[in-house]
Length: 151
Image (cartoon, rainbow, N blue to C red; front, side, top):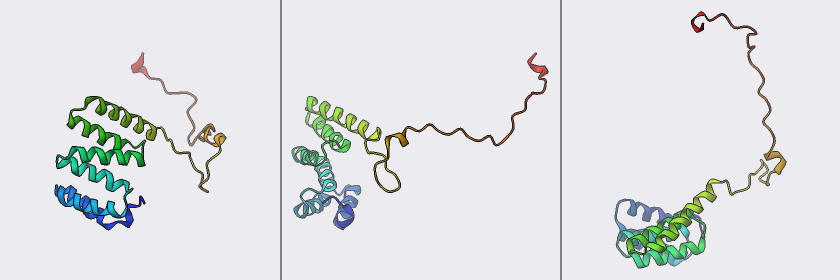
C-alpha cells in the first residue's frame, strides 16, 4: 500500500505536522501505520515527527524501516543522515549523506526507461536519432552593407 490518495488521515497528519503539532501528527500517523504498516509516506513523516519531538531512536528505527521499502530513495537517506547527526554518530551520518547523493544522481540521470506514446519502452535507435536541420525561414543576404565604423 503506497497510495496516499486513499488515506485522508495522512493529509490531516501532514497538516498537523506543518502546524508544528507534532504529537497530533504522531498519533495520526501511528494510526495509519497500524492499518498500513508499509505505507512509505507515513513512515517517513512519522520518523521526522519523532525527530522534532526529540525521540531520535524512534526516528532511526522508522527511517531504517522506510529504507527497507525504498533502499535508493534520497529522502530516506537524507533523513537518516540528519537523525544520526543529531545523535552524534558522524560515521553513519556521512554514510547516509553519501547514499542520499547517490540516490539523487540516480534519479537525475533518467533512470527510468523512456516510453513511447503506447507506454512501451522506446527503441534505442529512436533515442539516438540526429536532430533534423531546421528549415530556413528567411534568406540570408549574400552581401552585407559596408560598415565604415569597423575600418
